[in-house]
Image (cartoon, rainbow, N blue to C red; front, top):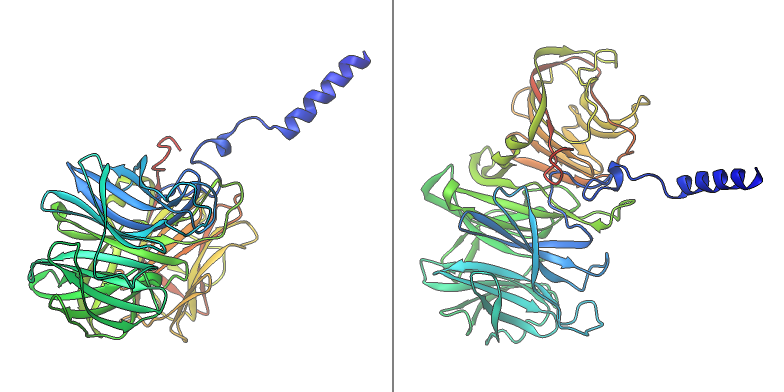
Length: 463
């Protein structure tokens, strides 16, 4: 009898220590695992490096530490997709030199990968050594590495390279971490480089793309963008970069790191992808994610030409259960919360709200019955939009507040006024809280229209 009791106690103890396998334990379904944002299965994801398209397949390259969560020991990871959403992981294409114990030394830190004239080429900084050029076959097997000439002073840098059609030369913009300078070089064949100019700058991971204004191909600007969501518009002739605007933001989120842009010729659009930094989240074997792919464009506004971003059209392929409201008045208090039926952790929300006579309005995301969650707030009197410490001085045209919101398990992306203003941020909600609220303070608001779509997982379609 005593032996039977001991067996029962032992079994009970095992159940407490080793719980039954549940959805939480399934790969890519942890409580804080992004469900429609790119993330690696394990270890540290760094910055995106580039996107190429070959035979209708997108190839994404990115910094990845295959060993731990540290910012270092980076290789160039590789993943493929047919839609920029569902990714399959491939072998790394460039690796840190074997047996190097320093987390940075001789890492293929960051660079550019390009498809040009039927050839795949890459320029990257081998940290501490300088910039190397390499080429690949159709399977992205790198077969030759050459150290470039004319850039020996760039030992710890981030090189962005592109083909400048008008001058028929390669152009490199290299941010030098040693002295915080942005260096511009050019080359006829990509190996021998000539420095053209440099200027002091605070931010690295540079990029430069030419975009039409309001889709007019005879009216273009060059967009110079860097880490932390910064950009300037410029004129560029292959050698001289003439800045036309002050420093602006294409993303006001403090968690935004480096960004890359890809010209999707088939759909005539530029697609942007950014690093979204975050603290290590509980029970998650990886760290880091990318923002949802956005389509970036230039448009005339009240302040001149500005960059606008919106979620890429592929978001619609993830729509599941949907809700819509039109001409719905919302009063102060909580009794008429129109979002009371929402109970999931991934949503796309789009709408237009007439501010009417309210003092403030906003959303509370992933809250419980105690209404304690993550708040998006707009203060009318202060013209202040805020989300998790990220703030934008914003005054809408008239009384209409137009917005889109992407909510994933550990990130929120807010787009206002057609993507003229964007905040991308990571967050850590209580995994047991899945309620949502739309509120107003000090007066009424009118929901002209509001649509909410629950989103499918790109990792586990049945989730």
